[in-house]
Image 1 (cartoon, rainbow, N blue to C red):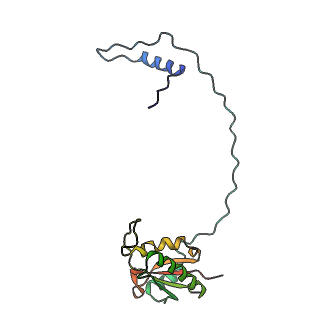
Image 2 (cartoon, helix red, strand yellow):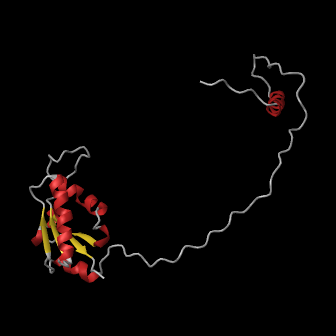
Image 3 (tube, helix red, strand yellow):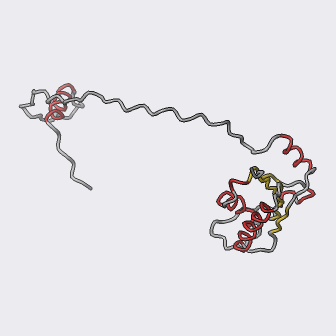
Length: 181
């Protein structure tokens, strides 16, 4: 613990004025105060005129961001199961390392084929401990979205949706890829 600092002259004077205005509790004596309180006012601080910061130019207007990446027509068709996948990636039975490699190479192949809808079958998601060593079920599905967000394919994915029941339901995902321009 550090040694407490002493009171400045101004603080001592203020304390003395406060102590004089207080009456002690019944049965107690008033503390003795230094007889020579300093009455000089502290030296005024010099203030510099305020300098205003330069105003930054307004950022350029951005186009309205689309939250889902798909129009309602695509969403309706996906929910109804009316669209068939152009490419399918099945990650069952793979370790985390092999599944990661398979998803990146599979998306490379899908882009080369100009596929628009990729079905990724990864199993149902289950809670995964970060220290999991790929021994628990559902580990691939739990890490899949993180892999996609961090991959070099992140900019080419327009949307990720849960697959229709006929294509795997909760155990599969649709990846809607952007068109090449």
